Length: 234
Image (cartoon, rainbow, N blue to C red; front, top):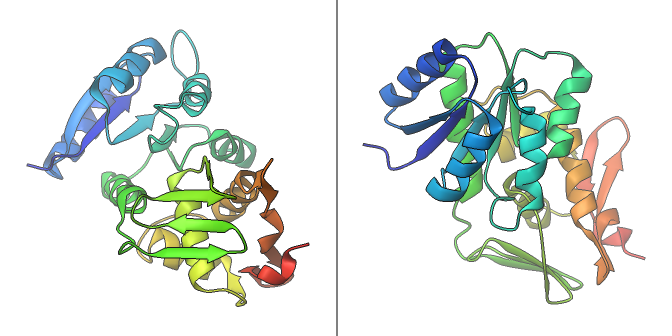
């Protein structure tokens, strides 16, 4: 049995049941909540490895819960996939901007959902072989999966961490959004290219601290995508 636990947050029993069956076939443990109050209690008490979060919920929206999780020191690093019927591009961007690690719209194929979950768990817990990378006071510690600026730890989500790790390991080269998706998310994961732009914005924001601003290391390359370059330092 897989030792990974997924919290399914949806107010519709039929949808929770469908997702739970698909996850159990893939050998995940499942816990369920039908509103944000139940969900937050389970996240604090049970420490699930990943949360599948519906947008529209009774007693408060999934976005409200997501904001609360990202404000909490003990919950901000819990991986979250938004699962919702909202398909407008603005909704997708809003969910990712608030802190979701991925976004899948209803209806969806259970096989795609499982692939997204496995890919996010790999990104969140992947080994970096104890690698330590440093650029002018910006340090990435692969063993602890922590980022430091001037020896102070930096809060950063798992996807942003993996993006920065890839960039720091491959400096001064421009990558397309598609190449970044393949390298960071995985070649067999169904993620739209615009997702890269959202995580780039979040990475740049995380690199702006009182101890130093390293956001300009992540440079936009017109007509191509992005590159990491220490030439961007002031």
